[in-house]
Image 1: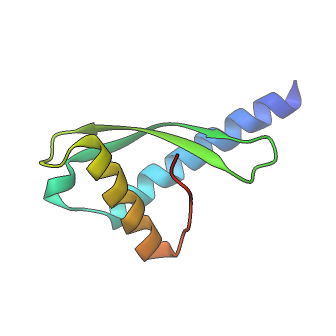
Image 2: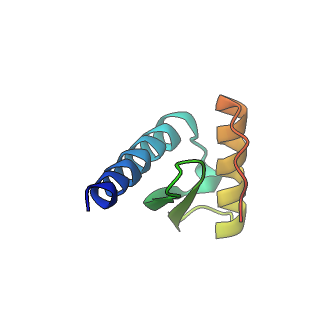
Image 3: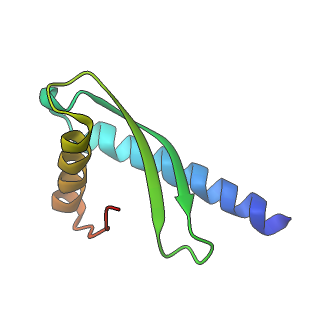
Length: 83
């Protein structure tokens, strides 16, 4: 049971950190407001699936997610895979 609680805590911490990074580092009127709603990290902590919602902006959801991912890669050198 402890591992499950630990995974939940890690998921929540990563969600908060990503939301904060996106809010601070990636700002563009066309993107609208992107909210990180949940994170699901694999048990080995090697990968994560990030769930987002998008409100407003002139781009569609897919374009917004791609632009945000690109912004994170440029800003931090991340090379995550989008599925």
